[in-house]
Image 1: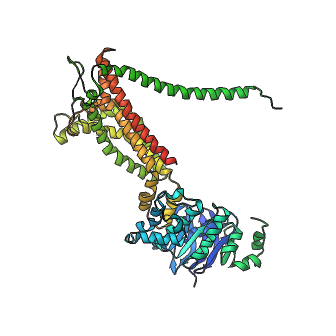
Image 2: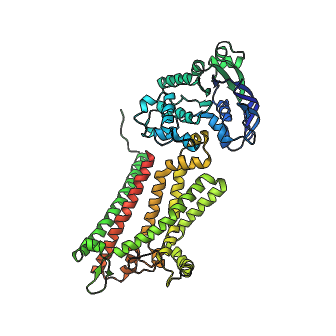
Image 3: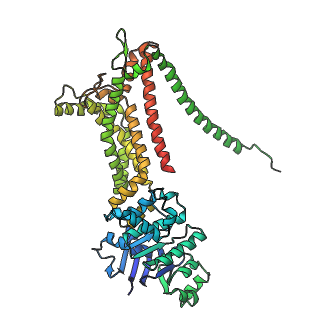
Length: 249
Length: 295
């Protein structure tokens, strides 16, 4: 049973068509990677899933997006409920300029969830991203003082108290060095047990390493979608092959 | 081999650099000179009255024999007017800044910003005039007072003068909060209000505090409007509905009548020193907050 389904999805920025007839199915508890050259629409597609594109003026969407059996673009969709269900990690780590603790507790506070267990929840969330041992004595230091890798982990931990089912990751490692990148990738593998992950990356090796399924996008089209191994070894389309072998990019 | 050559481009560069350096140094020297002058002229009064009695003395009778040089009532007058103005201007100014930065867009935003800046362009004598003619009679009637020229009248008019500083600097601070913080909050399912309250305002807090301090600094230093609308009675005000006199208006009102080199003249300069120290501390604190923001 697919957790995210798009049907004939078109997206326009004013007159410019950024996504063309996207039909995609994302499986639960898998890592799905979206690859393609800059400007191919992969980030735009990711931002369709939690409706972050709503913030941009002049965006128009046709077609259907269904997440956990609910029509995301139905006029009655509860945006807050959707964004609780679908968390997002951004390209540049963007912890709030607050303490580590406040960052993780933010979700609890805005959703009026019980604060009785707040300490436990913060601890559990930091454990899930393997930050607890490093930060348990530094819960009240400003988050912006952490290393970039820790900041990015914190941004993932920040999603945990809200209990999302899906994590969208928009080039989560592009600001990190190779070692930090590797460790975030390990974290993604571990998170896969409990979450569905969709990751956008321009780094093909990363897609090959972490993902179960891969979609290749070009000029707003989903050119090919399939098992990662198959996409990288025996791509069905010539354009996919040209891209992954580095003939353009 | 590289040879140092003086073509006219280089001379021009050198000239411009020197000129900029010079203007920078001149402005610092000028401030220094003003302070030294103030200090030199003001310090003489302390031969007649010791600094503690000067600050804490309740009576200000500069021309009686013997004269009383106590500025407590003037300090408290300034304090009362400033406090009143702050109570009005800070909440109003900060909320306007939030409104302009976060709620309005496009043309409305531009119009409001221009409007606020226009407010800063009104000469203070005009503000004082409006205060006397429009506001004072209203206050007199509403509170049934012998005169409408009170601390409250001064506070209201001064809050109008402090608003442009508070609004425009706060607005800059709010607008400067990186988009990625807002995105993060919204993506977590925060509402627009929660995003503003829990993320944007804390991030901009340094700039907003600085804006408020600068606004208050403006109020303390303001002279003309406050002289026109607060009644100028040099006694300690016990409520907002009594007349009072501020440090600034005392200097402005009396400087013209004093003999240069007289005790009164020196006393007015000493008030200048007190004022200078107060505004310096306020601006310096504001600066600290502004720089904290940039870290």
